[in-house]
Length: 407
Image (spheres, one colour):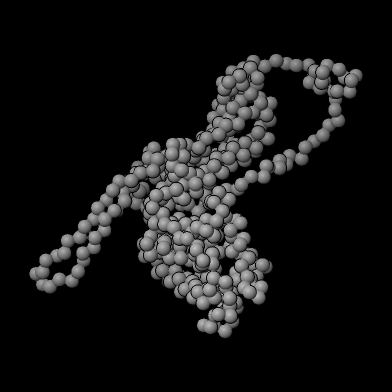
């Protein structure tokens, strides 16, 4: 689908990035602005260009989203042609993880008088006694009402999952065709001249669907406290799955049952920092993605500690290169959004065209099941709540990605 507005915005972004790169080249590895002769105020020019690049970069991101939505809508319309009318108008009702949990058969089976286990009535006094002696001061403690707030454990958030486009499959493998030969012999010919012969070759590729799973033990009493059980399970179990998936998308080694993350995909490019300033090395990686990968980079993934070093770069006279500390909004470099990630190895960055040349494919979403048949859970009044997802990661064009090493 041709999109002139996007093409024009990308051209303007590329032009501004080249202007920035030329100033950095003049300044050299030590970023000595006194060496810059092409402009009278190098720092001011860098800041102005950086603001323009960010503005155009946001425009490009928005236009790409519009284009993607239009293509998706068109594809869905094509796919729906020929489907029965009833199926075309069918809508699916989605339930949250917690709703699925508390409405499950296993959970409801514990709520009524008829269920998989018997219940024993206990004297109220016994519920409040500890050790069987009220006189000892062990029973009837003063009532304390909790606020209902749960302070989550400090752990790594989900950081990169959202930059991967998503799709669905009904198979255990995502199978696609890769064009491995493109020999374009198109040429001008005279009248009655022979047509030059072109050559194309295709190869079948696939990416396996993998399962990510976890389970959580709960007591019968916790399950019976529906509001609290619902909200807590609704929060933490899905997060555990997403956090693990987020890690696998970057560093999964591909051996069963791991996904193969982008950093371990065969064929991605690499750019060594060497004596270059880190921004220059990242720009060179972007160029490799464009020239060798024939792609348009849309994100830079970098460790938070490495981004700190770049964001705090200053000239010899102490001026910040990437703008005032008062600036807010999405961090960007060369117009691309910066995604800070704690899984990627410190000292390495990843530049890539995630939107076009990768896909996170779901075989199915989160599935939850509840049982007391695990181990000795039945006699100890416990339930096992398990959850899992099945997904595949496909990197369609490895050369559309480039690591930057030695930052």
